Length: 432
Ligand code: ATP
Ligand code: MG
Image (cartoon, rainbow, N blue to C red; front, side, top):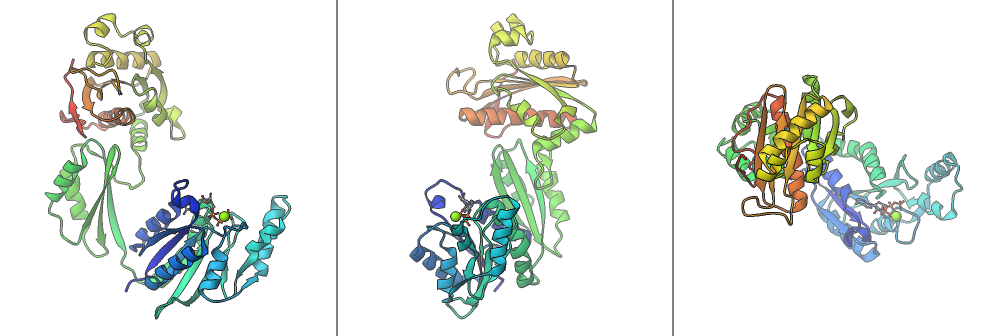
């Protein structure tokens, strides 16, 4: 059996919807890096019978159980008692835990409340885990797991920044040494935009990859991410090349697992010493907001005009009254003029404009809710793309800003603008 690890996440707030259990997710991701998968994740209330029951069931199937939370000084913090009861040992004050608490408070000029001393009391026979970001030390304990095997419990603070730090520093090394020679898993990541998940899936299926390669998909609206995995010793480059060829046509914007579309756009703007300005209607500045998410944005992003009302489109961006009355504010003609105008107003290399009907009101048969036009004006050429993305207001706006960023990326990287673009759940709108 491979080394099995489970998590017991404790806290009423995780069960009544106040707090999302991010600690378990963090551990799952860290283990995945080692080619390991969590055996079980169990979330239980701050209640001794529930906690004991949960710990027993996890111990029966795991060699390591990580507990999260319940190390504080209050009466609902039961983890120390839980571990002592489970292993049938007593509790005792640990001098190193006490001096950690005293130092922690002294360093912050605060008086140590006597109730905090409860945090220095740990199960007899346990090993303290240092918590450099908080007061409550954690601890490790090994003993009979209820079945035939020994189980190790490892109790960490529930506060995410403390939990993650304690996990990396003290638990991960233990898992690495205990898991021994686990298979190293190689992975290739592809982050895509512009193709619906069904089409991404179909194209990859058509690659007929060897069965030693596992493929996983994640719809991270409005993007689709694909990961190929292979055990060490199995060729991953060949299959990755096949996926690149099948998906390409510009759909892959990054192959680093954590690279965002904004980062790709920034990199492309810097590489060609180009700048951009936006003129936005239905997105209300969302594209500008995203372009300024990264530090150093001012090198590539100059500014934006949020031209929501037609008076502003005409008065500030000089969209002609003819265009507005003949084609409307949501039209290829309008975004063409908006993009050109913001580009010259701000003296940038590129101008990008977005105008659409985010809904829920304002749609018509000819231009239903979700109709969006994006215009790009640049040194080589100018073009407009229109599409209808049928969804709610928030998703239409998110999709529109993303599509505009992606069009800019394609233009900067010399990629074609396919006529099926952007078709994720949308259809191409007529030109005018
Ligand atoms: P403290 O010493 O601060 O009391 P603790 O170990 O007792 O720490 P909890 O009281 O259970 O931990 O939780 C502390 C904070 O961390 C709370 O704000 C809680 O909502 C949050 N938290 C607890 N468990 C998780 C979890 N699994 N994922 C994300 N947040 C969590
Ligand atoms: Mg607590």
